Image (cartoon, rainbow, N blue to C red):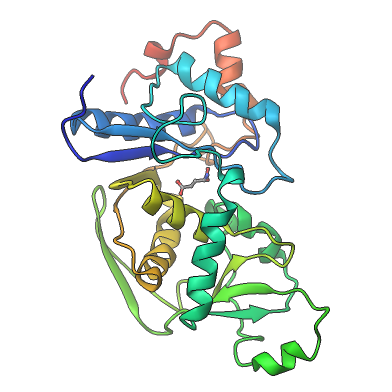
Amino acid sequence: MTLTHNYRGRLAPSPTGYLHLGHARTFWTAQERARAAGGALVLRNDDIDARRFKLEFVAAMIEDLHWFGFAWNEGPDCGGPRGPYNQSERTSFYRTALDQLRAGGFIYSCTCSRKDIAAAARAPHAEDDEAIYPGTCRSKSPSTLNAQPSTRFNWRFRVPDGETISFHDQHLGPRQYVAGRDFGDFVVWRRDDVPAYQLSVVVDDAAMQITEVVRGEDLLKSTARQLLLYRALGLPPPKFFHCPLMTDAAGVRLAKRHDALSLRQLRARGAAPADLRRGW
Ligand code: GLU
């Protein structure tokens, strides 16, 4: 297929478990939108938190996506001009962005060890969104930190308190979030030298020239955070299309713990992708 338009979309799964029907539905929207625009689709393996991902899930992810009917133009299995497509191989890009944020005075070092820091490498789906940071380390002078050379610290982005971040969602229409109220200073790099989700996703979507990010609506607040990062890094933001989340019969958001709805199990039970997609 010749690509005639500039649209570039992406599927960005994290290999922390088997993909389920909820992922498939969001990804299907991403694929359909790329197709409708005559654009390209990129598969990115978001394996940034090396401790949490497992190699077997990467292979399963690619196999399950193919089985379901996904096809991409660039990815870890087929390469492409904007690779590498495994986040674990892209640390130098994230480090350059971190240096730029530091030089611009957008981030500060933070010695707090909180639960949200441990979680920062993964996308904050639903109830695990990063808590509003109380600002403990915001005004510590760098010299206080230099006095403790052995201290390793996290890097946090200082949000412009009170500023309304507005964007037009391609699905939901106009959205507004207030910095400091809807979300606070967020982690961009963890003290154990792991880049945070918020930073890695912005750096990659920009470097891979993604023109529209299609993902679940649980990441709306992350979009507001990410728009601040685009601005600070002087990068043009993509468009955003947030999809409704798929829930189980009890109304609970599908998660990797819903084994019965994993693409793996559905396939083992003989389900046909076309039937699963009916009504989407
Ligand atoms: N890898 C992230 C996730 O699976 C991507 C989120 C995003 O689309 O930005 O949650």
